[in-house]
Image (tube, rainbow, N blue to C red; front, side):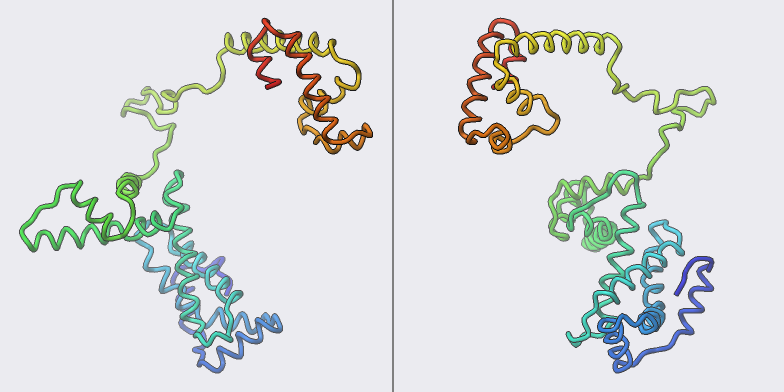
Length: 292
């Protein structure tokens, strides 16, 4: 069922008019798609259960996402379910599809809740969709006993109830307490107020730091060139290939090119570094660390 260009009511009406499949027909369609890649069978299977996808999508409207987008995601989950469904397992397709539809919708909601990644672990995902419900129930139960729970006690009870670490509860409370704000929003109601982005530290290096860094690089480069003069041609070649390339070569590849064993190349490399270290002693600890 194509979803583009239809509003919520149109989608619902079309889904409600779709055929209802008995177990035998559903099984035949599933086999036709799995074994023969029969697209007509796939379309019948998807259309028949689109009402299920829409029903599940409607349960997530409270998270602020457009209903049409939720239905789109539910439809994607339904199609994933159809593609992965194994009719030989003896399970109804609707039972199998529920998990894929729910997972697709939940992933969409969490991706679009905030620019900051809300959660990635199973415990964080469970918290995102259950925190408010569990919190409300615990508060009602406490009120019925004549108790008032402080915030820390309530967090600890939620942690035990959901089975997640306490710090995950504290983190998720902060994430769910508000929405994202634009960095271009002003800090005050005045039109000339400073924007929040102006308070961020400039991560670019200051001009004086860049000059100093370039000077240090030039100095180190000069020391390196001088140290290389203490090596013969073969040693210079090994040092360049092993230390000065963006993708350093292996001892084995150098050995093949030079007609030497890998162990012999390693010995020559160590000897070359020893010569260079001796030449550089007393000049720079940073450059000596390069050959450590």
